[in-house]
Image 1 (cartoon, rainbow, N blue to C red):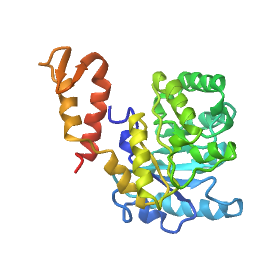
Image 2: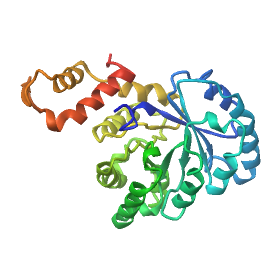
Image 3: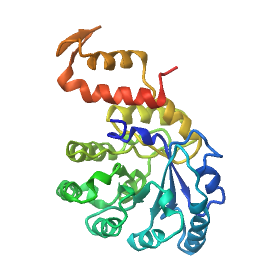
Image 4: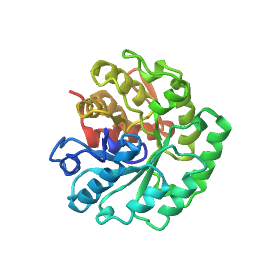
Length: 295
């Protein structure tokens, strides 16, 4: 259950592959509270800086140490993914984040990765396909029937790209759920989660407004969206604190999982039915195991 909603990812920090400190970050010398990290070789790297990014990754990968941290690379395209798979030390990664995922490039990405069974993947939903329900269902069916389905850690929602397609940018004081993306994210949940896919929460680029991030995290969690993208290291601790559970939530979850209780029971002012609340209870238990109790 720990991975079923990507809860264990925590805050996923993206860092450009050109960054000189990526080895210290990847080995937890910096930001030791990190749980997941993405080396970006896509939008955060200018085309003329790509050789520098690849040279940096070639230096860093063999020096990666064992650490309680999931590490990924986001390649620009399937051709770059194939090149990266030849690098020394690539086996020290956990997997790859696949940008601009659609029905044209995912088969190409997956064909490359079928030969490398140890890696998990996280496709990013961030193209115009997301706004069309029929296309979303086609994508869901492709993923559900793919040989790589069991290796799909989560589907990531690329909010910045989606807002860009709408010619929009969020305001400094509004959560994503106060933009047109609220409907889109709810639709993604409705399409993909019943088919067994986890979805992660988009990042909050207004990192100077921690109160906004906290408000948005509450709305993420209400929708079962975890593994939130962190666009700045200062956000990591805030995200992890939001994933802690209250004593009441933990008490209720343990009651649902208590075999001595009947199938339907009352606890405080709420009714619980084991058959329908077990997944919720397992999520609470997983959050408690990883992040602990709220202060």
